[in-house]
Image (tube, rainbow, N blue to C red; front, side):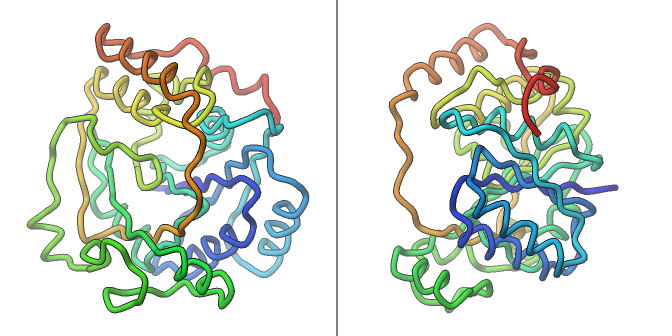
Length: 265
């Protein structure tokens, strides 16, 4: 199974560098890394170019014009370049445990998407991590807000991971699925602009199409760097689009990954 890791980013190269370093330290590296860039400036491009020169990772920089918060379209733009049978989504502010990719490949199961969790770093610890370029954290590290999520345990994962087919707790920062399942619903809906619900709407359509949910706990760990919250001014409109998919059992979006050739890359 070929694995493509998608990393979203927007104008935070200091954070992206730590994420890439954590990918470079994986026990098993993904076959391909695609950076879904929602319009970052030259500084991010320079960082990616520099990292590619010093790493053996297969990295693609999928950039689109900065025209507001367009995470759905940015991820479609990245996945359009994916060679992997299996897609793992993370954000450019989440440092990965060294077993992150391995854990995801071991839990992958046909007919399911996987939803993982994250460990939250405090504002103070985030500043320390960026200043000192820290990528290794554990249960005993300072500044962890939900410390139990940092426990890496095969036994605990077997006990507490579960299959619950619900939309609650959907987050694209630690999500994985087979590319065929993603393509069968036409990917993310490009109509989503502004923060919120583009990930839940995708999963609602996938579940309407018969794909089920699997929650992974105490494996596939990531450490989320603190940052200010995004504007939620588009949330009401995005909520309405999500409700429409749920109420009408919609499986397909008209403006999805099939429209990606219209956009920059």
